[in-house]
Length: 173
Image (tube, rainbow, N blue to C red; front, side, top):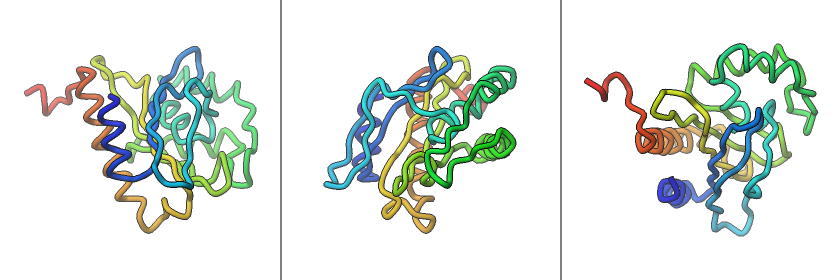
């Protein structure tokens, strides 16, 4: 997946990270940092909040309902910024939207001035235990240009999923 992460960073110019879900938490496992002087980066091994980070919400959205509910019931919904969702109801509505559109956004929910987008990575069984994310200053990742980032991100996630043995019904035929 590293070459795909590098390719995505080269095409978006923003930091790209790979995250995994283990022990009921989401962790950063790899990262390719932006070359911009002003960049967003996360430490390898860093735990991402499941209720307000793009990667956390992305993983949470695709977990089986029982697991998803268990994690939300255990969440403290810590308000990192004034944009952080602090209720289970608000998060449930967003998770539904994430499943519909295939990506998650953190628009200054975890850190003021930072926008992140994440897309799920499917394994060979069609399960989602990993995701890929893009992070950058909200001055660069904005509502008027976010679609370009989303499209590139989804292609990268699809390529990693394919490399992990995932095949859609169309591919299998």
